[in-house]
Length: 628
Image 1 (cartoon, helix red, strand yellow):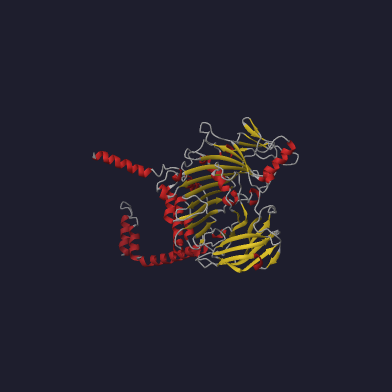
Image 2 (tube, rainbow, N blue to C red):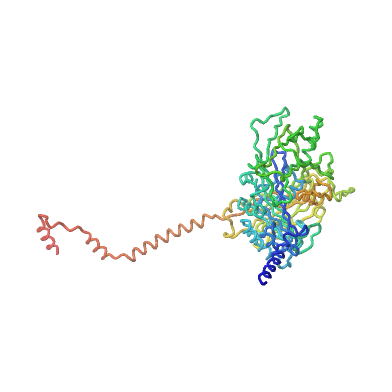
């Protein structure tokens, strides 16, 4: 009887332990994997991997998870993270060629190096200590130097220009951090299938790091400690890898009468070296999308008017998919057209390929072959933003931010574009290290080459001056430009500080980096709607595209040369001092320890005694006695 009771107790214990894991839809974990492919105007291809893992709230699901990574869950619980984003980037996003007015460029185009920001649900006096502990944890988790952000000189507390988390947000960046496979491998280990199955299996390391741009990003949203409107309760982990690759061009590329060259044919196997061997068995969604943006669709429609046979999205033939401009080797499972587009004549188009019917024996691979040369441009942000240094010498200089209108804002909806008082809002967030002493009172604003009164353009400003070896300088501004503006510029002067010799890095002569400035346009939303509202077939990446996020751009990383000491002088002083001391003390010890009598006896003992069998031996003895 006691044995049966023990068995019953064990069964009940197992039921209570595993019931949250196998609960219904309310407490069910979800994982999805998706890949977005997109041809670019400069003969390159954009590949955006999107992985999303969802975990229900702890009070419903418990602390044990089947799909959600344990390391991330423990990180959220220990540091009470409300929202966090970490990115590792190599290269710089080309806003002119690859676009700047779409969800991919606004969300996944990151500055070079490492960027980290996090919002905590802790008392204000504990935010800095929690941030430092978080940087050490992430540094060990991703094999990076993120722990350098623990110093108060390396991070800041934005108020309103970056993210709407006043008081609990911390931001830091390491522009010179190198990105390699040591950072990608821990990132892949967070996936349920890792890189053994599914879309992650085609991530060939040489192909990725050979690209012109790649950025791996980790976004975390948690509602464990508060309510987030519009976000499902629980923890959402979003992992994206954005890569820009150059397909191998064909040697016999045909040149047309217009002088244009046919773009190279590419496929998944040609740019990654592998085919997709089916989906991850734990994934709820496993899909590959091929996107044609608005500019490309408009050019293809011109070709179709000349051809008069096909539409962009309904030209299907047996075993392939074709239209006058290009051809696909695989017929898509579904063709999705952008809805609610401001440019109804040239809406974006998505070709959807489901991976559920593919396996390792029958892998998935799609070829994209161009038939005619097509020239188009991607949709750009309202302004092309650049930042540069002015002045010369190692004493002082100026930082300039230039904004040039792309002339693409016409037809976009601007929130306050009513009447003659049309104003365009631009938010600026910039961090400057403490050794670059910026004089914020020297701020000058130029609109269309003409100087303006600062108060006429700057609607709101927050300045946090730098403190030597304590905190960096922070500048947050809200600018209001006329809608007819063609160009604008902001300049601020600075002096260069001096560092202690121990504070210089090993490559000090290369210069010091100023992190990228963040320029956002709140009046413009980078959202694309491919599906009707309340559609049950919404994929995570398409749902992400529908979110209303402001258009965002990052400027260049500035390289500031500072006055550096002659690091060879200590070496020279040390070597000549050691030489002098060696000669002095060597001679002194030689004189003090030398004994003349012992040396003479030693030398006499080494004299060779003459042979006694010599015939003049008696004469030699007589001579020696005479000398005595």
